Image (cartoon, rainbow, N blue to C red):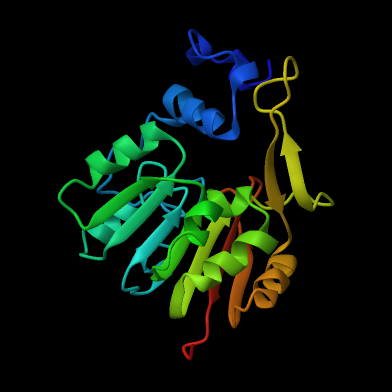
Length: 236
């Protein structure tokens, strides 16, 4: 059987899918089956879908502060906050944000419920690094999102993101109906590109240097992870 939200036991008692919005979908995802969580947050889970695989916290260098777009339960942010780096996380799901606040209690961390593009367009604040681990960068049109990110980075700032690589031959916006194929349609979109295409999009948005590649999985026959870092010029 296909493993879809419709097949999950957590759907029992959930709101009818024909009342869902995009925000409601993510709330349902988090409350029903986006959590359980990583059991030991003193261990580094990392930027890939394989816990502990790939680069560690040094992947971001030493930013003055960090914003995560789609922070989930702050499993990566907590490591930076424990080093005294101020972190900000945004997410659409209250269950994720509640867990993030609990995890980072007493640390230099703040969390807000917000859409990535709306948040970036509505703030004047700047960060040393903006990150997205299987998060908002995957789910927003990069031609709209990347200029907003660039505007909210400090000079020399870094955008780092990761998600699954594009299916070969299937590039650009990819749609799915996460509520199933019956009832009112709710579409969730992801934007998938090759590393070369991401490099072009980032340079067009004003990033000076880009490092984009697919990191192989621990088992090379398994699905890898797209890892991208892009830096602004130090001069404003």
